[in-house]
Length: 104
Image (cartoon, rainbow, N blue to C red; front, side, top):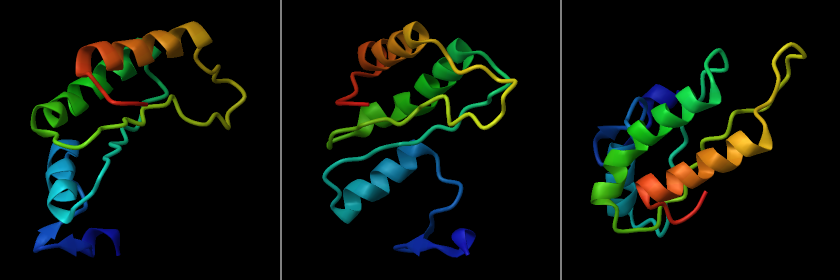
């Protein structure tokens, strides 16, 4: 069903965050929150670099506040350690400094 959702003739499934933002702005949204899934097999630094690279094109066209969601995910496996608080804080600071996000 998700692949069949459309808005103004544009299929919503598979859109990159920049295209989602443009549609959200057209629809009258007052805030946009792109979500970037993480690869738990990669490091926190790798994941945040990927998230920044994916969300950066949004910032060039955003006319509404952007609040990114790029957490390292909920851990259900006992053999995978969550990222340290230091790594999470540095990641958030990188997002704000590089992307000029309005919030996380």
